[in-house]
Length: 435
Image (tube, rainbow, N blue to C red; front, side):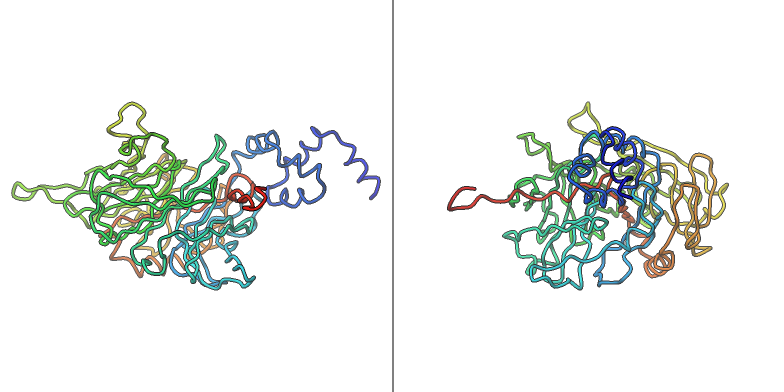
């Protein structure tokens, strides 16, 4: 045993790295504890880039989480795909979500998941404290209170979490956003923004190009993509749209921080010369391959999928919809009458729907038009296993009527691409000595 240890200790860094790079990320978090040399090697940028390049095609765990009050030891997932080869996670991501501990060392028994971004969760505890954390690493950062009373304005405050990442998707920092929406249809928004890079709250006024009907909106929290928060609004005479707020835009012009993107108006019809909108159509908004995706049942049998692209050429329209794929569900098993839920976060060709007829989850590959009924604890070709289908079934059946009236928002929670600790704010200098 001692001889083997000496052999490993005498290996050059390059050879040792070639051994460690083949180990899943979860194991590498333990490897860092062996010695300072191994810790320094595993945390190096060269090792990280080599690992991400080597494992880029391996399966990753992901889940669709519900955002209601959650108590300790309860299920957080509506759908969970697990068996992540990159991280080496034997269980679904939802099973790793545990509450942080309070300053007094007491476990918090109840919290709400308020936002998701790049492997991080933003939660609000029962005592109105905000935490940002990585549940897989079991790391939580307590966010210092802001001037806005979360208890007094609990019903009208909307939360957002935006992350800043490098070219590999590694999280470098994040911003927590609070918006008090007491004033219905307000166009001038006051944002309370916390930055992990400064540890401070700032107040910023943003001018929206159109009013947001906050109180009547069934979509309380935004989806975060590339540092931009996307809030959703529904319409009764049109398809509604997205209010986008860019938290990392350094332009001094306030209008560059916020813009409106209307949804494709494909469900309009004319009655007696007047335009009307079919608000009972089945629609969903989710993400895939780093883009916001809009799924629209144009008719009983026709489904279209749109991708929200960035527009680098027109200042007036910073993002626009591009038709990604469409399919005639009449030629697909279990497709007719299904409700779109979510897309595979790493494959924009795969859409997941809820079959009302079969009362189960169905996936459709938009490229080859193959469909599949999903079962609990069943292994699939991408190496993942599915869980939490009973939870999804009860959720869908309870809210069935809503899915014919409102846009379904399904942000996925996927494991982070790297094992870096959750970014923490700098430690403030001592008032007395300045250190």
